[in-house]
Structures are given as C-alpha cells and as structure tokens.
Image (cartoon, rainbow, N blue to C red; front, top):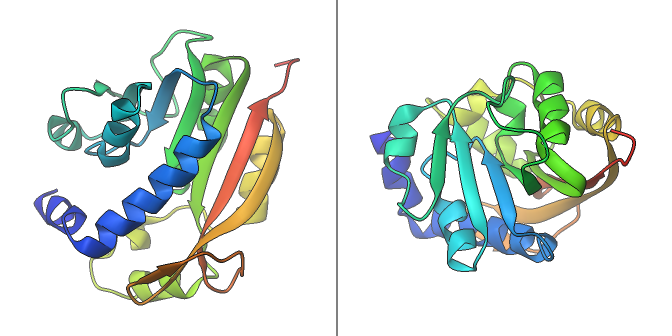
Length: 200
C-alpha cells in the first residue's frame, strides 16, 4: 500500500488520475449520489466530492480505505456481495477496478440493484491491447499482473445484460506522455458508459 501511495504522488499518475476524473465527472452530470467500487485510497473520489457529488467508496482493503480522505464515506466490503440497500445511488463507477473482481457477473448484478431507475454505470477498463498495458504488465510487481478479465468484448456483453451500453477507447499513453486517442493500440482505457435498463 505504501508503494502505491508513493506512486500516486508522481506527476505521471497525478495526470492519469486527473484525466480519469475529468472523463467520469463529465458523464456524471445530473447525478448526486455516487458509489465507487474498488476505490482504494479514493484519490478520484476526493476530486468528485470537491465538485459536490456525494461519494461512497467500497473496497475490500481496509488498509486502502484508511488512507481515504474524510470527505468520502467508505465501506469495507466486496463487490460480489455489495452490502448496500437497493436503489441507493444515481451512479456507480469502476475506475480500473472491475477487471480485478473475481465474479464480475455478481458485481454487475448488484450494481444494477443498488442503482435507482435510469441510474448510470461508468466503467473504465484497462485495454490489454494498448502499449501502456503491455509496458506496465511487464514490470515486476505491477498491479496489472493481478488482472482477472482481459476480454473487453466479453465484459461489455456482461454489462449489456443489465444496461444500455455505449463504449469508446480513451486516453492514449506512450511512456509518460498522455494524449487524446481512440486508437485501440494506444488508448490505455476502454470506457463503458451505461444506463440501467428499466425492466431490471
């Protein structure tokens, strides 16, 4: 956790977090109560809180949550069970966290459950076809080596069982250079922007 916290303070990762925050914040317009699943130390969640969103962070790691800012309400628990009431949130976000959850099906089912009618799901998925992913996953001790799900099309199909889905590649990264790109070879993220289906 300490090494992760240190990495978060580098200019490169600060720029990545800001790009992710800007993407998510723009798509949360009209939402107030937001659940972030796999929030870790809640860096992006703090930014959202500062913009007036009521943010709840859920994570399995109590150690990570201990580093979260006071502005973000945090709950220790796993996404497969999601110990939260039905219809509690306007939006649920996964910022590069969904692919690390063992039972994604259970997580998405609970995501649909805790959302209000018409609620939003925003999932930023790491793109295994990108230069950035290959570079990072080749480093010893990289957290990307713990990824459990690399089939982006399969993830999108799973989500589309509960949500109306739009998806796009986002955020080119080569080395420490960040730039706009929808090229699957260089875009580090695959962003799923979805709306809860009314019959669920």
